[in-house]
Image (cartoon, rainbow, N blue to C red; front, side, top):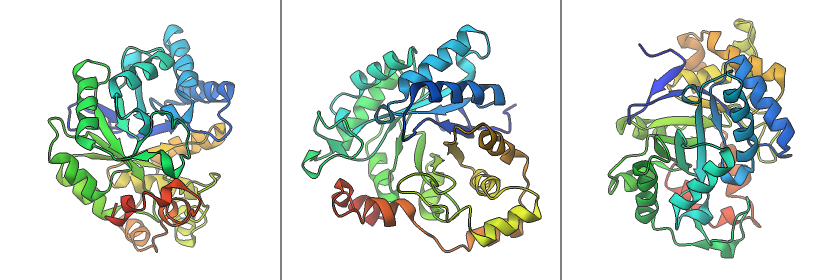
Length: 316
């Protein structure tokens, strides 16, 4: 029998629906390690990292210590990392480097971070316009499938892929992606993308499920929404819990990013909230506010993401 806090993926493995993201602006190793230890004590079993976050070593160190101390077994923890754009030429080597940093023999999930290829030296979060090169997704995905064949990961997937890019990928895959991790929250609900993913049995995992408050590109619009706040008041819950429960109610997993102990507990408690049909209908009527698309990616005139506006033009 499958636990209610997990969902089964198209490849047969299960993923815990609440994950702790380890990206932080400060990227302080000690803070990240402490947050992971706290999260484990609270019951978090899904941890999300990426090469570009710079948090793989801190996460790996904390998990290794917890496993050594008998707090958790490796097989009870779900670890996700991601292939950065500068490593598309050799996903196997990139994953081997990630595993070295994590001090692990395998990943549970390895994702293509963006459908974007960069020159091999572009290992920084905000690449320059001249760093972009043409992506041969078929070759990249063949490398991802090789990672799977070699036992370096238990599942492979994608991140930030639009509906059309998912369809194009499915044209040539031997192994379809198990997950598409995208920004999703009550003000960017990803209706079309969720429909396409559901048709193809691809699980949608939501990052920035609260709208990214505290991030340079994020906003407090979700948790300050009068509709979200009134639903929270009605259920004696917090706006964050309402937003997270909405994401969970859509069958998605949610990746939360707070290292604050009180907020981590609050996020975990979103499981206990029961939204009624009227609540969900109200949320689904909210005006969409595409945070990443409108305010960070596309309109950054000096940003490389201006170059990849087409990622969003084909309706993510």
